[in-house]
Image 1 (cartoon, rainbow, N blue to C red):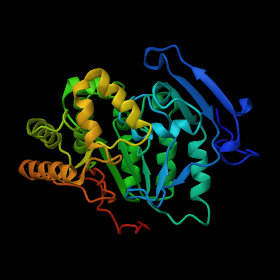
Image 2 (cartoon, helix red, strand yellow):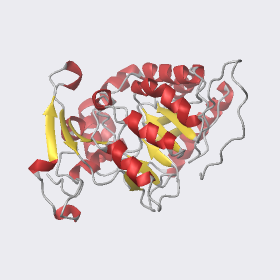
Image 3 (tube, rainbow, N blue to C red):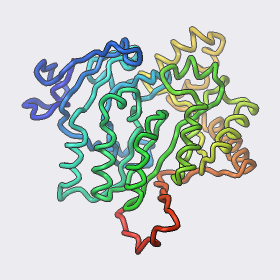
Length: 344
């Protein structure tokens, strides 16, 4: 296992470094929610990650307190990152979780650097920062508090219901900077969910989170991702999903068709062969040219979802735009003064 390129005060650089036993603490917990999962606690060297310029992502910086994800989504594009540590991108990705226990401490240091210009930071875009491990390690409160204290704009994408634990911190952050919150719900079909996203809260519970955030005065968008070809893309399924998203009070919905990058592609096709073998040839044709579905198909799904969103009174989010959260105020509270400008 390759660890030294990740850990603090490493004398080695690059991927040539091998596992250093004194740099990692490995733990298992004999509780139902963590059974079968191994946690590798490390003190990371850095926490701010610059997104490669060639990426399709609409942001430049991310923070990822975990590697690997117990959500176990069979399509997760981040599976490939486990291979960088010589870890398995299948079951290993689901059950070998790297925990950057010094994430908040590192973020405080890096945001205080004179080189940092206060750019937007996205979280939950690689693996979910509110996966089950967060219930034990509680890394996000320190991270959000640090971003709040520096008035640094940020956004969170999650399938986890645990985000509600940090509701008050999100409100406080929204008082001083731009904050975006988005919940990922690609479909509402429970049978599909049980097999393709086995470690996640159900779509219904995630939509309950959208409702709870909205009721608390926090505007919450939905990333309708992934729309899965031939399994979750019928007109009836799209209508049911958009209708449920609208009923939950989402401020917007943005569809994203399944993409299959190396690492995820092999694992997903293995799952497809076990559960829907008749679809394997269709997928091989659809994704013959690379990781993304054909442009005509993506445009068709986008058009259908946007039409349904208009029908139900919601619209797509603008790519890369952080959504302002309006704090809840009681009638006794004074009106807010001038808003502090941010660097976003």
